[in-house]
Amino acid sequence: MSFESDIKSTDEISHCFQTGKSAIKRGERAYFKCLDTRMINGSIDIDRCLEDKYPHDNRWDYAIGYNDKCYFVEIHPASTSDISTVIAKKEWVVKWLKSQSSLLIKREHSFHWIATGKISIRKGSPQQHRLNSSGIKGPKKSCICKN
Image: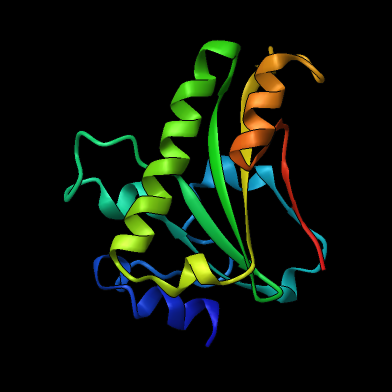
């Protein structure tokens, strides 16, 4: 199965697949650094796709397929007060994917937090450790998709 077929077989997002990075808002595409753009399998704006169905939920932003891996990316301010929100968003999307029996969660994947603005979380701090324990990489200035 491909990244595209995983999305298209997930009922609530089946209509939201986009080729390349086109599902990502123009102003946010620069946050995605893909070493070989020919290896991009497509993208989905999870937040926008599900906002009507789950208007009050803390939804995750994006998923991008690269070299048959899935990069889940949240673009969000990066202060210590935002950690709980980003962790809650990750927990929400994992629970949602499982409830949909989505194959995306079974694909090799990782979760990334991309900072809008200054990063106010020190490396090695208890807050950074909490993020690492939750399985979220970052916050960083970009998501680097690589082989």
